[in-house]
Image 1 (cartoon, rainbow, N blue to C red):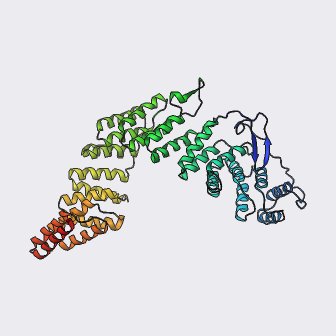
Image 2: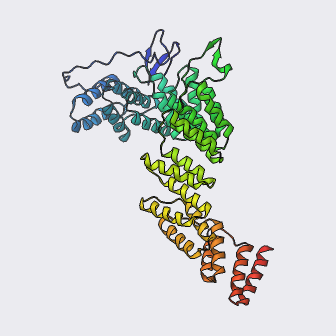
Image 3: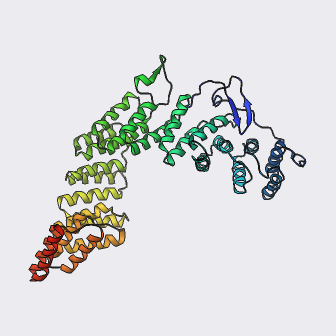
Length: 505
């Protein structure tokens, strides 16, 4: 929802001034300018252009009425015959505005002038094209062009490119009869370009003019700030955007109008606190749903459940699980995986299996995460037969195990003294999935191989360990020394003792 405050200003499109009496900022976004008229009958061939206006008119005629194959050569000839062999930004904007009902033609014309250096483009000519694309709902093309403008007019040419673009978009807004979400696209372009400070600055500039971004844009801003600046920075921005603080909500005795938060807004704040393990703050935002009259969705419930599951608080997690059913919310794969993972982490694999069976009965497709949770659970209780069956089923469904899961399996095999199986499994996963062995598992393999007298294999693993940046410690030296002593190789054992003493000094 975009609201506009009244003021008088002069709109300037590349030097083409339009003075609006009692106008309003960006012109009431609902108002429409009088469309350019065009005759259905092709005009007579234009005489050689003698002014900028003649050039613009002739260019419009060529673009509208010439066949696509010939229009571009005629256009180049026309522009080359002009004073500077190129269009000014003002002339380009005049032409584009008369073609605004043909946005694809406008963008082709724009790229044509760029490619052949046929126009002295400025931010205002870029803004004209951006508006034309926006009013035709060609959002992706408008977004791409905003990013191009940000690159074309860098800080060396403009004080701050994005703020300069905002100024150009404001000044050309009414003349182009644009769409309000063009400002959302500008913020989105900043966020995608990792220009978080500029996005916040543009949001603040628009808010100061009583122009409000869409809730979805605000949500993206909050989410990215939470991820990059911390959850409390995201939370503060959330309260500021939606005027939730008493001192900001009312100014001059009147409550400010603003956009309203939705479930996705609160989800973005919740997930920020969840990432940092702040259970109390997650619960606080959960309570805020009712305070701001928002209804939590499946994602909201999943975040709250995950918060409890990560803490091993399965009783609270299952209460949330039941509330989902009470509210007729259909649990998704994330819901099931969250609870399965929670039970597996505390070693209650049977309960995890119950949820897994229910998942199958509800026709919810299991994912790689489902299998990894169950594998971790069975490794925790030492049931390697179930681990092997799950891994085979996982491979049958063409799921690739994550590195942490590979290491959990190797560690469990080593603990059961299945060293050969662990080594074989690692070599297979290293080749197939580029798995990387953790330091702890390097040590387990080396110790296990030395215990059974496979010293050469142990040395190979230890060499790989060094390559990965893990220096041998006293436990590794001890394993080799004991292994060589069992074989009666006292010379090698003594040599390793000396080496260990030297490295420890």
